[in-house]
Amino acid sequence: NLCSKQFISSLIVKHMSGKIMYSNAELQQAQVLGAGANRYCVVSPHDEGICLKIILPPQQRQIKNWRQRLQRYLSQNFVRFNENYIEWLAYQRLAHKISPDVLRQHLAACLQLDQHQLGLILSCELVRDTSGEISLSLHHYLKNNLSLNTQQICQAIDELALWLIKHNIPLFDLNSGNLVVQYQPTGQLKLKCIDVKSTFKSKEIIPLSYWSKRLMHKKIRRRASRLKDLIKNSSVGVE
Image (cartoon, rainbow, N blue to C red):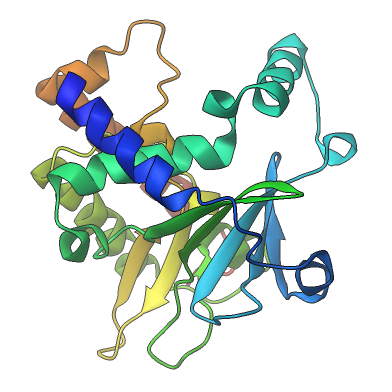
């Protein structure tokens, strides 16, 4: 609604101060955490508890079809299509309805959006285990043949799905690259999502799953079941 849009817009204006928080040299020397199709992530030079999401230069982006070409063009030329802007907006909309403490149970917090020579830089919570080690993505465990308990990780997927349903969060992009495995003091596993763009940006032509709670819950369960099947059918590093 209009009030919600005005609230989110005020947050964006507040946090996009235009100040250069990091020098290019600092960012070049920062520890790289990983890279996706559109962005790469580094540990903040100023705070080891913060991850910086930075848009990849145009020449480093993969373009497989005309849709991606159009998306890249819009992202470069219009801020509303910028991936960091979209994720910041998505998190602020969630934070307007749900307390930050509740969101942090399973979502990495988006903390600040800053303008830089490299474009918009999104500062996010860097998820760490209780030991202080950076929590690794589920994709990393599967790809690199690392040991992972099947029963525990499937239970963690169920817990995440139930939490999303309880708070009516339309997070459908439950892929292994967007979920990090956080080890708890008890030895149990928790999954935290590190990309919430899909809660704001639908791939559906008519976003019925965003409008109907019944369809939303059904889709979350379906995506969670698909991820568990992937885990169970994979012999890569799974106990």
